Every structure is written in C-alpha cells, then in structure tokens.
Image (cartoon, rainbow, N blue to C red; front, top):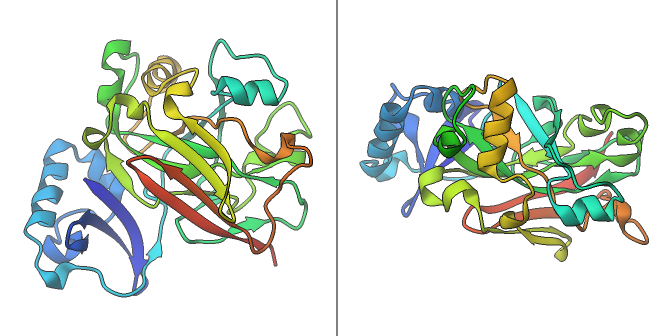
Length: 287
C-alpha cells in the first residue's frame, strides 16, 4: 500500500493511493487513525483494516482539489540519520570509509512535506541537497537477530536531507548544520515493505536541481544496508513504531563540486527513488 499524510480544510488526514485516486481513510472508516505512526503501531490488523477500507471506498471518499502534503510520519519519536553510507560520497568528501555506521539525529522541525518550500536560512548560503532512502520502523526492536531485522521495517519513503554545510563543519558534531528549520523534506508517500525488494535494495536514486541530475546512484551501493542498520541500531537503541532512519546519501553533493553548487531561492529540488516516487520541493529564502 501507499499512504499519504496530508492536510485538507485545516485537518490532518491519512490517505491511501489507489488506481481510482487518493482515498481519505477517515471518510470510509472513522475508527481508523488519521496518523500513520499510530496506524503502524496498531499492528498488522490495523493495516489490513486500512487496506479493506481503501478497497471498498466509494467516489465520495476520494480526495479532490489541492491538498497540503505533510511528512508521512509527523511526530516520530526518533529521526536517526546515517552519514557517509556510500563509498563514493565518503571518497568525494575526503573521509575514510566507515567500518561502523556514522549516526546522528535530526528533529521534526527540520523537515517539511512534499511540495512545501525548503528554507534557505539567512545565516548561510551553503544550503546543500542530499537524496536518501528512508526506512520506517514497524514494531519495537531491541537486540534483534540480523536475519530478522527487516521484519521490523514497516516501509519506506524518500528524503532530501538538506544540510547547511558551513554550520555542519563549525564543530566536530554535525547537529546544528543538520537541523535548521525546514531545510529537509520527506515524502510524498510511505510505501509498505511488501511492495519493494527486501530492504529496498537495488533501487535507482537520483537528485535533480532545476532538472539537472546531480546525484545518480543505487541503494545497493550503501555500505550498511537497511538490514544492517536496523540490526546495529537496535543493539544500542530501542526502536519504536514510526521511528525514521535516513540511510545516507551518495556522491554528487554540492559542497564538494568545483565550483560548489548550493540551493538558492527559486530552485526546484527533486529526489526520485525507483518504485517509491518523486519528492519535489521549491527553495525559498528565509524572510
């Protein structure tokens, strides 16, 4: 299934993409959560109930007109990011290939949904793009077997893990440069794991700015694949339903290019992952 979190008439809603269009689940079954994290946490039965609701939806339940996309998971307990997870990206940055995942965190205020503007802050012109696969945890995970790690992944989405490079490099910790408000995006859809190859492996991933391809890779090139990331993270941290893992970006980011390419007001930045979709956002200057 393909879920979309959106806002219409001032209310947050949860929809399912079908051949007929986008179904507003609350218009079919008011007992279903309007929050994807809550639905995932409710387990397989709730997901099956959502599938049945989408299947029996009448035309009245279809969403018409413009909607405002939200990030698929609005209030994740954790947003865990992985740095330097593609060999070519580590090489272009002049850094050693990691032997253990490089882990940092982001906050929900740093992300917007599909179609919403990415904000280039007043403090910097070094606003960089990063195309990434997103894995969403489906059930509580702690000290899981590696062979079973993918059983704890509910599905996948797309991220543009925008970074303010000069602030990222001001200290040994990347937190500030990775958490400026509204500098990243996630969406537009959450795709359940059963619709994709195991671990979302082998999918082409691109970033385009104003139509020009700047990153072009495949998720099979990740140093630590989804299974390994879930396994390693769950050895240290209790992962909960709706937790988000951004799995890293490939070569082609802006700050290492000669001359550098940074996002500016009026740009259109797109991230596309095969079989998942296209995440697109305009860029605007902070007012």
